[in-house]
Image 1 (cartoon, rainbow, N blue to C red):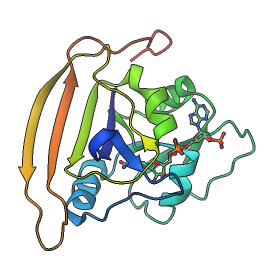
Image 2: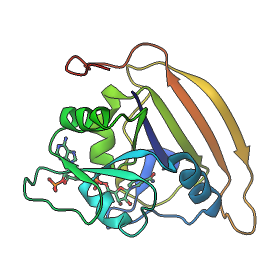
Image 3: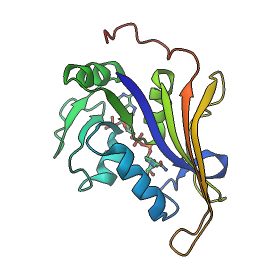
Image 4: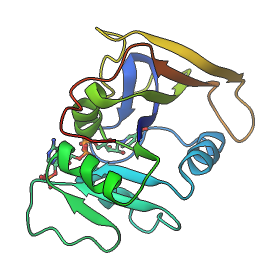
Length: 176
Ligand SMILES: NC(=O)c1ccc[n+]([C@@H]2O[C@H](COP(=O)([O-])OP(=O)(O)OC[C@H]3O[C@@H](n4cnc5c(N)ncnc54)[C@H](OP(=O)(O)O)[C@@H]3O)[C@@H](O)[C@H]2O)c1
């Protein structure tokens, strides 16, 4: 099973305002996110999951939380990264897509095989950051596409698909 992480970040790896929500509205990126995640198994931190409630259709969300009594409206729950991976594997998932937020991205980065990134050409206010994914990990570009700003999308953006050059870390408990 492949572990991918999908995220959109502005300059300085800003992904969130710090008081809930994403500091931009970019329909092109929303479409890209929807297309990539359609029908897939998703892993979400509890805060991001609650922000996205109502959004899930044909997805299989897994919520990561320390709360053993958590009872989500849709999907299933895991208390550790390893149990989330086991759960996805046990359902026959080919891919688990980590959808954030920051805390979960930091937890999941050592396990990530691929990154599906949108680099937003903007300097925005925000305290929630994507991890420093280039520190200690080498990635190769699978694809890259740049779009200018337009009437509907106020910032230019680059879709970047990266693959880890060396095997992802510590999957010792996972029998793929
Ligand atoms: N730009 C983007 O692409 C993007 C994508 C997603 C989210 N975001 C933004 O990111 C922000 C949310 O990020 P965040 O870091 O505050 O929250 P988060 O990662 O969405 O959720 C954090 C919560 O997830 C659970 N969790 C995380 N790691 C865990 C672990 N190792 N074991 C068990 N539980 C774990 C904990 O839940 P409990 O407290 O219940 O224990 C924790 O409080 C929002 O502003 C959102 O809009 C941006």
